[in-house]
Image 1 (cartoon, rainbow, N blue to C red):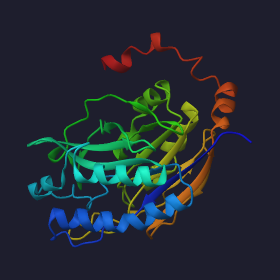
Image 2 (image 1 turned 45 degrees about the vertical axis):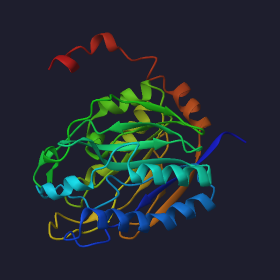
Image 3 (image 1 turned 180 degrees about the vertical axis):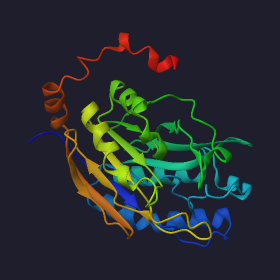
Image 4 (image 1 turned 30 degrees about the horizontal axis):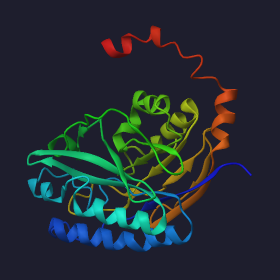
Length: 288
């Protein structure tokens, strides 16, 4: 029997009217996630990831400073500390994508990574920040400044790449070169905009780099912005680019899959993309 990692992804819809306070949103979304976290723990999930900024709605269609109050410190904020307890309880690595407050006026779109013993390992800050109709993210998030870290967890070496990041192959390659075996991409993306890319880009990253990708999207619509339907379809894709498990389009769900980590070596040994790279010829990529 090869090395198998059981991983889980949670996709949920927003639970409250956007008129509710940030504290109310945080409490409601955490309460909604807890049954799925416990379900994952009871199923023996070893690595679990939530959707982008999971403690509230996707507020970036607005430019309302109210939502700054949803941000919290990492690792000393309440959500990270709570998830450390769940990680210890279930001996489960948890990737926690939340709105981060570094200091008043400086906010990031971030994911904390917690090891199976509850230890905080570090965080990834979203590097690529969109500023297009319905996605006014530069109003809310400063671009990441921590590169493309890979976290050596109890079960696998994992990286995080958040939503809009997935449109950029460069960071996906950096994660592979840094040793990632699984890359998690928590997202908030709507039908009619990026859906045609949803099952192209991340399988392409998986193939190009010989690793697994776990792609998470929320579900439902969020008034009053109504930028479109968050279409779910959370999935796992293997190093060959094959989608091996997929969630529904329109309901809250925990998706679980067994990831055969031996397939990474098998695929990389067959397709020697890292061996045959020619970085000395790629200078224009950082000059242009």
